[in-house]
Picture 1 (cartoon, rainbow, N blue to C red):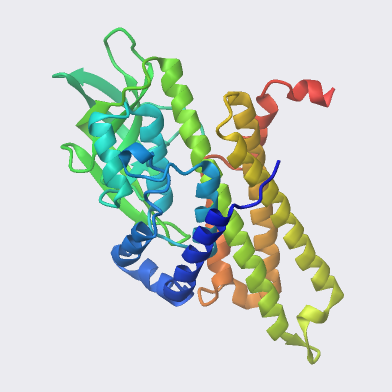
Picture 2 (picture 1 turned 90 degrees about the vertical axis):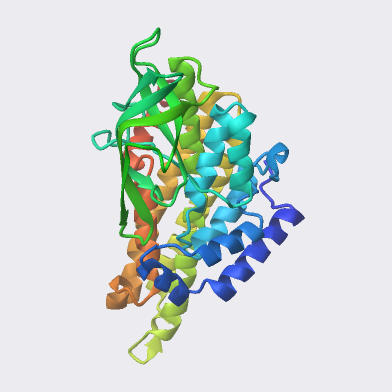
Length: 383
């Protein structure tokens, strides 16, 4: 399988990197994180002009119909620069509309507006007591006046307060399908919706959403409980692929920062980069990163597979390996930076924090090891 970037993908990555290197340096990023909004409209519009918001949107709605591999190219660059704007949340929301929406009417309008950068989206995956279980959903959708109202809460919604619309999983109440899982679109200004915004340890934003008889519209493509659950799981797998790609960019940046720092930090009158034991350690960091990269590329390729178990296997394998690499590379980088590695004055500390959050988003290493082991064929391979 050839994972070489096409000329167009490489040119896109180069253009995005040039912009981020020139305009989104570490100090600029820190100023955005410390601001009241926590995100920058100026930089968001720049990402829109570069075509990032249109990249995952179908051509029929004004987008470029980008593949998961195209998205991987973009996410690596955003991860390398520790971008805090709500791109991941919106991209996953776009995928949710593509999978669960009707493709026309209001759904098409939302995709068009997302492509143009006019609105942000977010998927409210988890509830307070759910841990990593996507299907531990207690939010209830009750039919009312030709639509639905939602009651319940969602926690840890990445960039939930910055989103104009949320995609919300809920269970149907009453009717012919009580308890069935379905997906709903909720406008931020809808009555009965309460948003609590906060900053996470990696400088990103997250929110707790509370719905109290909040009007919602059911998305059309999840006509049964099984279809709703399968769609939600596929949306989450897409989000994991993008997170893994972001982590690869962060790992690359952390490796580079560590090598450069060891060239300047001296001990016994020489740079510590000349000590063979530390050189071996940095090589191990690189090996962990490259193994994580390979499985991430495979997950991006397998995401579109019609075999759901093949997709699950590739995605969980990538999440496990990326999580292991994030912990190993992060810990080694902090040690090689010494006391400076845990201060807010160097990028290494922030890269490690972002990698730690990625490792625990949509399932940690243990969760995905269990998911991988539960897939058909694992026991036979062990035997």
